[in-house]
Amino acid sequence: MNRSVEKILSTIAVCVDAGFVIFLGVFALIINVNLREGTSVVPQGELPMIFSIFLHLLWLPAVMYLLSFVLGLIGVLKLKVNSKLAGILFISASCITGMFVFTGLGIHTLLYIIAGIMCFVRKPKDQITV
Image (cartoon, rainbow, N blue to C red; front, side, top):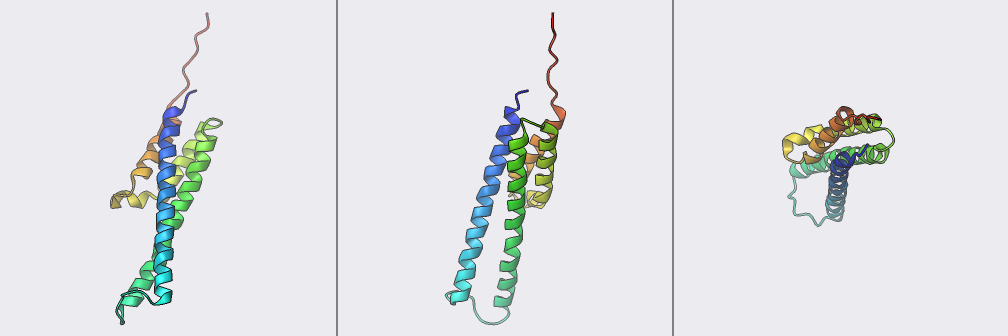
């Protein structure tokens, strides 16, 4: 069966996940390097402590996007062989980053959900032999 729609949707979602992982990783590394060198313009007091907590929490979305990326990539590779497994992987990838739907950064989550549902719902057409 031709699963090109699922493949296109999930490939776009995997690319978005990869972009977010790269962006968040580079952003966190740049800020960590600036804080360690002391080139930050953050004033003294309680604000650096709050800023440090924010930086430690910045890795959480990066790890979540990385897990979603890995599950989505495996789902894309397994799509032709086993569409049910690919659907499970797409739905689980969307569950991992599902909280980002409410922040406006969740387009890939919706794409994974649509691709996962299509993997379960679409059935091969029956061949009529004469």
